[in-house]
Amino acid sequence: MQLKHGTTLLVADGSQMLVLRNTGDTVSPELSVIQHRAVDSLANREILSDAPGVSFSSMGHGHDTHGQNDAHQQMEDRFIAEAVGALAQTAAGTDDDLIIVAPPTALGVLRSQIGPALQKRVIAEIAKDLTNHPVDEIARLLMDY
Image 1 (cartoon, rainbow, N blue to C red):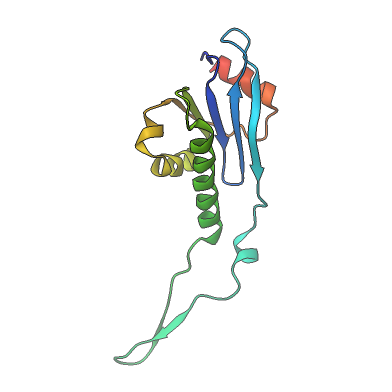
Image 2: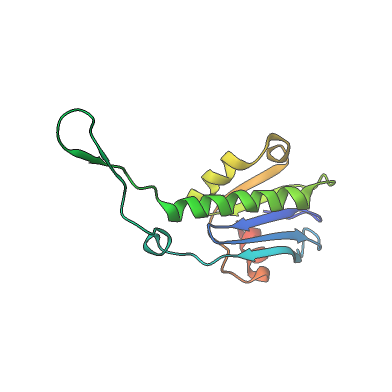
């Protein structure tokens, strides 16, 4: 894959994001970090404070327990929404191409969060987790993709 000068990249997962811009050229890309953010990933047991709720039936005997949401997944989804906001803020006022790199689950959430104006500018969606790679290695891996 060739990264043109000015191409903006969002590399994200549920707890880390990098917004990068290619300040180099297609032959030797140089990715500059525009924004970096990371949050601590907590387990459900650290997020939830209590057992699932219980309701009593108005007819007959017995009670029902309410299902418990996956709080960890909800936090990751909120973080992905924030990452899309950061991408939109960085891409505002430009007409640069956009590339999104995220693990498959996060990529699905990203697709649902991204607006049509940004979606038109996305030239590639790559289903890989590259958030823990050094920036220069991200450029090399994308060139080989």
